[in-house]
Amino acid sequence: CAFIDAEHALDPVYAKKLGVDIDNLLCSQPDTGEQALEICDALARSGAVDVIIVDSVAALTPKAEIEGEIGDSHMGLAARMMSQAMRKLAGNLKNSGTLLIFINQIRMKIGVMFGNPETTTGGNALKFYASVR
Image 1 (cartoon, rainbow, N blue to C red):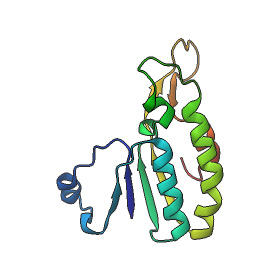
Image 2 (cartoon, rainbow, N blue to C red):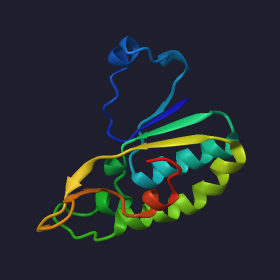
Image 3 (cartoon, helix red, strand yellow):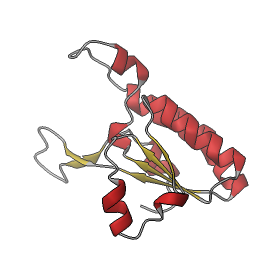
Image 4 (tube, helix red, strand yellow):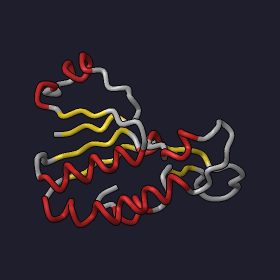
């Protein structure tokens, strides 16, 4: 099993108490969203693991956003990154039989008067490619 800790928040002591076999867990704390998704793709292509967990989609920050200034507009950048990654990952996951689990966060849509104001980060690609939600 591989754990991509994009939030940089994994507590190995607590995880072990929950029953996680830390000694056999491949863990990566990537610097950018692109790096995290490339690691997922490499693991899927290698067939080295059966399960990859990404924590979390909201923390998959595009490199351009990290290198930019706080307050810069990066409209749609994360959604584009996820869309490109899912197109690339889908076939490799299928061919290797690897399960990829994305943990995500719920955000509130501003100004919604009717309907559900909740949404998830990362654009629509995950919703379209997901086998189970």
